[in-house]
Amino acid sequence: MSPSLIASKAAALVFLFPLNVLILLVISASLLRGRVGRRKAGMALLIVAMLSLGIAATPVVSTRLMRTIETEPAIPPARLQGIEGDPAKASAVLGGAEAIVVLSGGIALAQPEFGSDAAGSSTLERIRYGAYLHRKTGLPLLVTGGPAVKGMEPSARVMQRELTTLFDVPVRWVEPDATNTAENAQFSRDMLSREGVDNIVLVTSASHMRRARASFEKAGFQVLSAPTGFHLEEPATILRFIPKASALSQTDTVLHEWMGILWYRLLGAAD
Image (cartoon, rainbow, N blue to C red):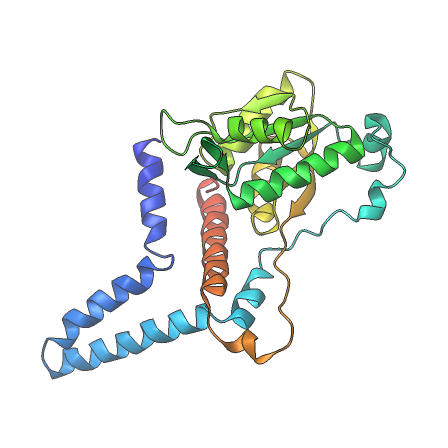
């Protein structure tokens, strides 16, 4: 991982939970030890930190926020009926698609039950849907994602292994070097352009699709979005208004994606 990438990720963490709240709490604690005027400011900052944490962890809030980034609709299952795993038929139905590209969402390192690295939860959702689309369409698969740390197994190799061994689905192309969404797009473009592939079905998490699609279109692909792992609204009970860790994680995902979208717009990068 390059020093610039490490710096950008570290800077992003400052604005994400829980570090953003911890920073506010540290500043608040230092102000509360000062004079009266500073103590008032410290108390106000403490209240802001507590409220922001509570609101961000409330399911009704996190779900509403998630809707701002999960804007790409799913491919209707009915659209895939009658294709019978025929790539030619699939291409005609799916706007000329020639391949399926599946993005990594991270891996779980050194899992003892497998004796190796394994797909993380987001990656597992994505390869599951990629396998489903391959079986429905017959279109070839490309998986993309580099190592989390230099010298470790690339995510794409883990994805390839699990697709072939767990889902019995072949992977035609493996792109093992990308470290962010922009590189996923550019390195996949470099690989597929040599095969004459310009039109793809793009598989990633619903919350990541908006940013991913922009990156792949910028790289020169024609993209059919195939999002998976949607966050649906919880049943209308009082529990939607009680803070919990899973809702805080969703809010954090939204903040991360919006930061990536803004970064893409400002500097032409994504992630």
